[in-house]
Length: 161
Image 1: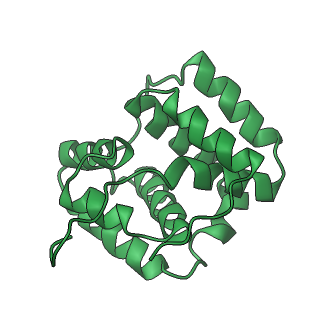
Image 2: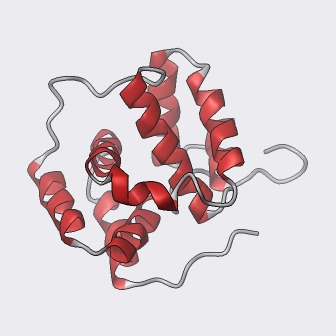
């Protein structure tokens, strides 16, 4: 059973902020957050318990074609009921943070589909990114939890994921 953290101002703002962006801009915002703030976010991701689980899901995405990698990320962000999205939905908050960290690293090193060179975060996303940058470390983590926790689909009943 996944324990949902007690909502905080930053957590609630993260949850609401992503709902105001389309799926591709949600992914874009996560990309910018993890690349711009990666050094401060990093300790909360790979060192977290469950990072092996996040790495396992990341490896499944990594093995897909670039087009299918992007679709898998869209499915997770859009809460579509696919096997990968249900696996993601069953992970702990820290494991979800680690998964997105691994995806950002994969995008940096070319194992995951890169951001289009001409991609520009919309004004609403840029404003949000500026707000995130001005937060202290704990607020940033809470905000990111608010972004990534609701993503993914519910696990299927029975023995399947």
